[in-house]
Length: 364
Ligand SMILES: Nc1ncnc2c1ncn2[C@@H]1O[C@H](COP(=O)(O)OP(=O)(O)O)[C@@H](O)[C@H]1O
Ligand SMILES: [Mg+2]
Image (cartoon, rainbow, N blue to C red):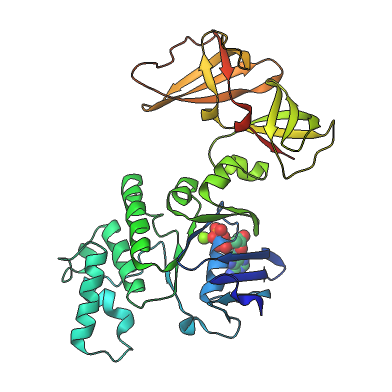
């Protein structure tokens, strides 16, 4: 019946291992051709969910549909999915061509046809001259490309990727992220990608499900998660966030007025939630939404005075930590180190912070 809204539809899925609940009532849909990520700390249930899509595990309750078909009675090798793992699951004794063609061996294909398909894959992963190399003569990044090609040559409707870049060093990982994204666009196959690395998820994904303790906390676009987190856990998991204790002073159809400790009264656009006067809330404000100045603003914009506690120079930008009265933790401020206007002030000196109220998020 309702298995059709979404290319992959996960409906009220629970998974128990003995008495331990690894997945708790997860429902979501993934669109056709979407680059979809499951993001969360180690142990939150990402691999378990992916293995249920692959058919290596079955839900304890609930149902998974792929391309409109319920999967509960479909064994792994009959599902229109393929999986790529973190540890390059390729055969060291086979050359690159034979590794890529490995999954085709059961299909009765003419040799010329199979060779064409392998050539096409070698082009796709940008290793056209590596066909005769032994897999153990390849770098980590190259081996992961082979693993991708081996999965893609079978033309799955869905590719499942379990932290496939996790074993690569930072620079190579960032390069592979761009390649993976471009490759997914080219083949148009639905990707479900698992990572614990929030930057990686933001870079790659059309949408992301943020998971914690077997549940989905928020499912949104990268921009939505970053700019409009729905709770404190998501807000602090994605990027750096300043939190302020607040009290609701009033609400109109467009905005909510909140008195935030250390910031004063903010008027924040908020149309969904209904709040009562006096209610305790949290105000979240990203470090780059704050601006640091060495004098009070003269244009009448809102500001708060503080003391610069310390600064960290990071090359392209600097992080500043500012202590303000009424707010215990120093406020993090991030600023680009521009050629003309780099902010230079001594630690211990007074500074002023400004911001736009619209940049703040109200959390319950
Ligand atoms: N086969 C299993 N038997 C018992 N517990 C398991 C099994 N597989 C996973 N778990 C537990 O389920 C939870 C989620 O695991 P997993 O899905 O691997 O997390 P992630 O991939 O997000 O790190 C963990 O607490 C893990 O120990
Ligand atoms: Mg895992």
